[in-house]
Length: 191
Image 1 (cartoon, helix red, strand yellow):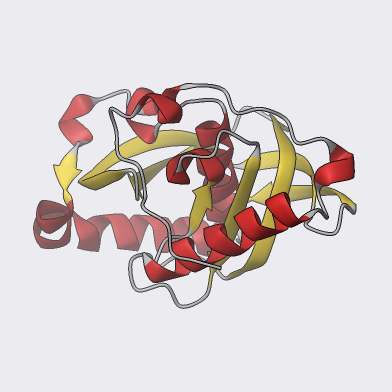
Image 2: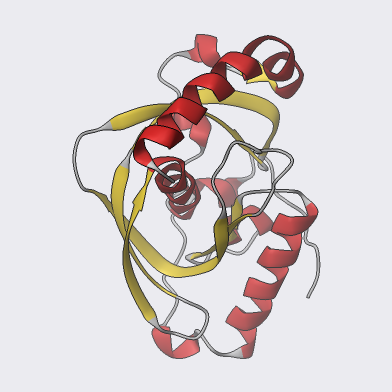
């Protein structure tokens, strides 16, 4: 288990589709060590999630966890979730604008439209299959991490570049309005 370096925008590994993990390898030492490193790195950086390409490993593995995260105090809790070979599909056309940041795009945030309701299928770290519906900000978090597995950064999904802001400017000028809007959204749709 180790905290790994997080690759930043411009690194070619972040822009390629990650390789599928052979289901027979999920419980093996390579994947289990990768999962441990992802969890350690995510927690160390106060991330809501992290994908293997962000630490230089082009495999379809990601972790998500939100538990009183100081970077995202408005996000509903998500228990530690390990995703191997995840696939997401929108359940309808409803979207919400989320002001996102990313460990691989340090210091910058921007508004991204995310589906409100998605079905996600994946294997966990024991190889067990999951098929769940995710809603609201939780759905957005899952979509963000799964994008990494396809070589997509949140920057690619920002429709209006005028929403790009540094974390400092977000905190100073935009946070209060965003938190008010997104809190009302969370209360309306749940997680």
